[in-house]
Length: 350
Image (cartoon, rainbow, N blue to C red; front, side):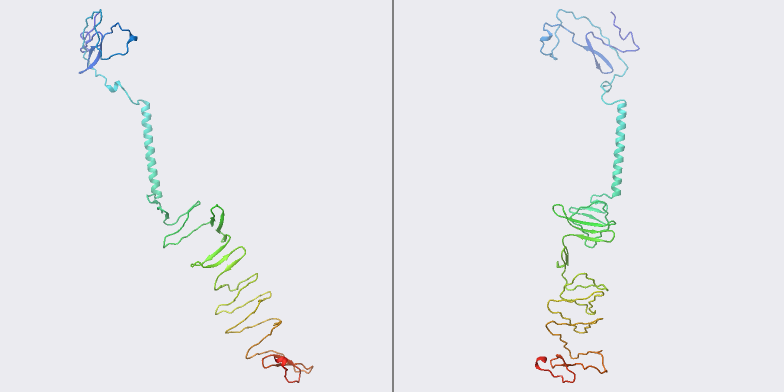
């Protein structure tokens, strides 16, 4: 057998060293050198009886064998040997790598667009660390600088404004304010409708002044006014369909008092006394028909320096004699016969 060496192929190889029973190891300067490899040998110990293999054990000499001669051939090649990265290729290659790059690019674009959209929304809504727009969020409250419009229900425990501003509640469809008890049942309601009506639904309606003094209250069976003076400013007066019970009826200081019933009668009734007093003016009783002053048990007293009865008819005709009117010293009136002196006994003038 003949072994080809570098002399047979001078245009392809350099120097090659070959040893029988050896392996190739990489050396410097692009040279492959054959190092010794232990030859297979038989020992008296069987394979299944070996407990372990000692990698540091030196090979023993072949028993009963003769080591054959060997030849050496060294090949010097000009081809660059492969690197470790070419031998051990770790990673994603081919279409998988291109798909991964495309996915990363698309994800980057989406993240950039999301950030840009977030910044634009924050700039449009004026979102800052203290609030959004004219709304400022504080530790215990939310402050709105300017006007606020609520499209849905709003729940809060207190609604107030700054010290130098007024509170205005505006609605195009009406304002409804409701109150509930601890069980959730509605107890009171204040409704302001768009047609101009306003209604309050409650068991008792009360109005107080600044000193917490009750001025007006209304219940299902009673309405009360606790006022010193009740002034009615209507020019036509006030109309009361039912009865009126009061202790005093008094007009303004520069206006007259008029009690009028245009189509029906006017009755003044009292359990005890009825007093009609005019301190600086007149009292007039005008009637289309009769005026009757009747006292069942007492007297009808006219107490004045002058008592004038004007408009009495005068008769010049001759006829039946009539009675004459006489008066006692105490002002008592009595009637006497015609032609007699106005003298009365004690029973009449007393």
